[in-house]
Amino acid sequence: MTHELPAAFQVASLVAVVAILLVDLAIVRRRPHVPSVRESVTWVLVYVGLALAFAGLLSVVGGAAPAGEFVAGWLTEYSLSVDNLFVFLLIMSSFAVPREQQQRVLMVGIVVALVLRGGFILAGAALIERYTWVFYLFGAFLVWTAVKVAREGAGDDDEEYSENAVVRVVRRVLPMSSTYDGGNLRTERDGRRVFTPLLVVFLAIGTTDVLFAFDSIPAIFGLTHDPFIVFTANVFALMGLRQLYFLLGGLLDTLVYLPYGLAAVLAFIGGKLVLEALATNTLGFVNGGEPVAWAPEVPTWLSLVVIAGALGAATVASLVLGPRRSVAAPPAQHDDPPAPGRPGA
Image (cartoon, rainbow, N blue to C red; front, side, top):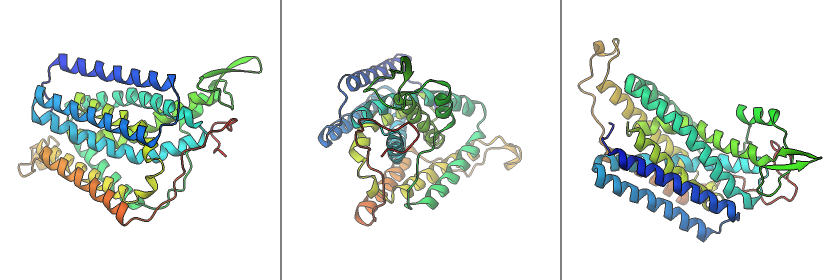
């Protein structure tokens, strides 16, 4: 459901979030470096604390319902984002991004992803408000995705990053340098101004994340219909992703059962969406166009229990029972990196 949160609270929250992102981006740009494990842990805890503090504010302003939906949505988005870190590792390796620039690349990529996800969220909210039967499609898609993720399981992830259409077009249209120039987006080569590979990497991270949104956005709409909560859950999940990249980059090979936990979460939310579609049914060929009375409503607390239980069980099983899988480590610094699109040395 959509909650009647005060407009002033929503505006103030969005302004505060944008301010945090801008300050974070300024810090990363001013002091590019490779964060230590201690620094990464500290900042991950800071962003987790901010998310929980925001949930507390939601509880004070709007009650337990929006706060619970935010926590469930944030936890789902965060867990799905953890699995996406593997793809970010592939991108960084493919473009041979210098280690000290990786924080900035992730930060700008995340900002691009948030802007694009915002468009998806608005479109999804409008679609849901007008056509409730879309829950059937969302639910079926999430169940299909869960089956696909479970089948892939913890198999060998020896894959390479493949440029998407946006990145390919940018590389063809704009004059590009084959080497980096520190943190500069543009540099001078042979007497003319050209773009460095950083521009392409920014777009690669941001647009690749949007591909993951095709799973995560329908999933969170299965937990809440409020676009404000959907967007803020995405913001807080992605804000903590940058430091989590450096913290878990070398540990992703241990989380071999995480795909099964994510599959369970996606299947549960998919089933929840189908039940909600039945409860609000308007399709003529289903129950004569009338809502299905027996379709139960899944409470938010049960969603939280299932999500936390599935992810916790997958993590414990991975650490205790799971064999390691081969994952590329974050690429080392290159003084003269190869042309973008080719794997780094």
